[in-house]
Image (cartoon, protein in one colour):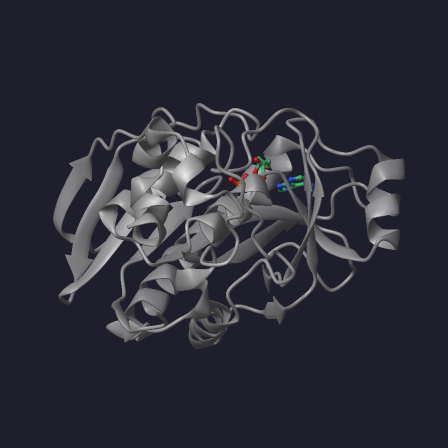
Length: 291
Ligand SMILES: CSC[C@H]1O[C@H](OP(=O)(O)O)[C@H](O)[C@@H]1O
Ligand SMILES: Nc1ncnc2[nH]cnc12
């Protein structure tokens, strides 16, 4: 089952990143999904003959809160296009001295503190599946991100846990200290359920996080505000665009990855008992296992 596939890389742009330069044969695609509408039209095209896609997570003009983003529709739409890899770009707060504003982090773990009902699985409606999430990110893709950051001379920390809060408010000081004690190195609001849905959709996924602030744990620094985040974001956005293009350039034309079959042994429901409507809805994701 673990065979080579033609690589198709997509970027999910976070706060401040609403487009990518240099895409040839650019189209803006309105993709419909059984889970509703994605955050925006998906930009598709190619660079040097290799396909590329881009979607702004919060929509153009930043219209959806982290709780309102339709993560399922975004991931499903990318799967429908044939995307094999996703690099998610995120603005985050730094929870350690060395994860300072202006640096980049490639997290290797996630601590989920979201509380509001975000739809967080493609399973349900008569089909039960349990995906392994021990290692939420694709280590192979992380190497390409790291190489691109190095090439673009951005100080980058590989590893550590991202704590994902519900937001949209920022944390209290007590929360910020407690996340530090739990071992988190950065804080954001959108990693979950995006990462789990990518895994359920068997798409290799990794995050390039740009630190914009020290949240509110550091006594000598002002607590985070949108104003402060935007000031740092401005500087980070151009670097994140260059890094994105470098990752795209270096990813091989074809790839093999155990994540492409992540759901193979995850589904517990007897095939014959899965409702036809659910099978139809999930055909793009799991139809290959139900033939
Ligand atoms: C303006 S800071 C808070 C906002 O920025 C991050 O978004 P994204 O992960 O899409 O870059 C953070 O998660 C919050 O949504
Ligand atoms: N301090 C912070 N908390 C949560 N999300 C963020 N995104 C950028 N900075 C953040």
